[in-house]
Length: 572
Image 1 (tube, rainbow, N blue to C red):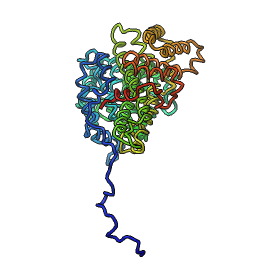
Image 2 (cartoon, rainbow, N blue to C red):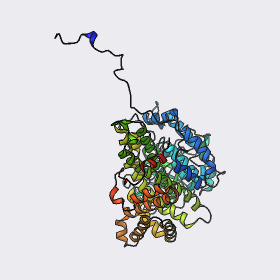
Image 3 (tube, rainbow, N blue to C red):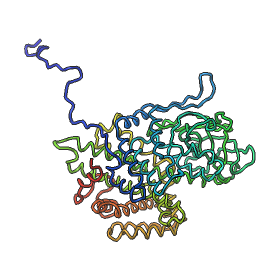
Image 4 (cartoon, helix red, strand yellow):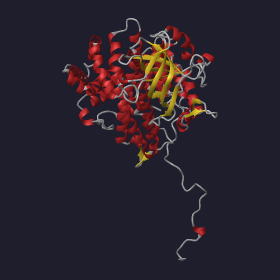
């Protein structure tokens, strides 16, 4: 050994696992009121007539940020649902098991009435915005548990059109209790969830290509019993107590809609055979599946051959929830990014104090606030348009702006969550934190309930069918454009795009839908955000600065007060 080599006693020793002191790692973001500290949301709740629910939202907003509740999201996604096709005796059971965290998430969602609040007998004005605000808060915690809640919520307006059926289902549908038992309703189950099954292997979004058949077992038509033979390629939440599905009663006839329960009226398991659970991207807490109907029992709802219009009523609500879910992912990623930047140092300063990082955060904050204002205005419009004497503007927001918002906000969530993850750096890319889960979840809302092209074509169809309402909407928007030349120019551009020939409009459908969503957001920001915040959004999304900023977040012109925008977004 060289005489210059250190002896063992001269080598620095450390206790096991303590070679260094851990510094500059950000503590988890916990224990804040997710409602009160979201100024844009709180103001929108009051504006849309739901101030009476603000105290409950604040209570829930605080509860959802507690460490034990945050842990539920991680546990539910770490322990995936499992399908047991047979019991030990070899009998077919198709039983699904979930981690207790999943059931606790659903218990919380139902307790807050997020599956039925606007449809409860005691519902009051503002119930739809109140429900949507609560859904938005829960969406910042965990996304998978929202799926069966959304479908249950959206099924209620459809099922209410069937008085005899709804009379039997009203109590378990509206119940605020979560009953996790795989048990027949007729045998005393206290609450229920509804799923849906529309797409088949050969069609996807083209549901008119469906080939599942329905055969009457008695008097045919609305309210009649049928046996269904066929399949569904995506059968959302197979653990639900019933599903609404589409099937044909005639080879060349239109599709009809059917209520297909998990258990037959005699208590036997219905012949809906779960082939497998989907190995999907996104959340791992919820289950989606492939199924076959082997003479499954179903009841026709709506008129024969009118299944698509019947179930579209359900899809209108689920599309709104897609917008809210994406806005919730954006908000959750934003507050995590801001919190991280306030407590992480690099190159001698906190990230939030570095001009370029502030630019990124401010740009994200503008996007998030605009998405929040948009879904809350849609929530109000859904309620107003359903009321007697609903205004044409409310009908246009619901019918025209909703598909545009689903297209645009859901698309923006993908880039948004990726940018927010980048603020966290490598820590954001690992599954032990929330950012990777947000990012994996972001694509689904662009696909579910109609992909981007389907939404954009629906925007065109709505403009054609709702011309009076569309004109009323555009006229109303123009009243906000006087103080914002960029917004006025964007509205003029939209009108011009809508006056082209049919082929040109269809080829430009994405540009039109994008312009509708951006104009809607611009109008709402002009009306309800502080002037400097509204100016920053409108100038960079619709004005001359749009050419400077492009699609990359963090390219706001220096003339805007980036620090003030970040502080407004999350003052904690």
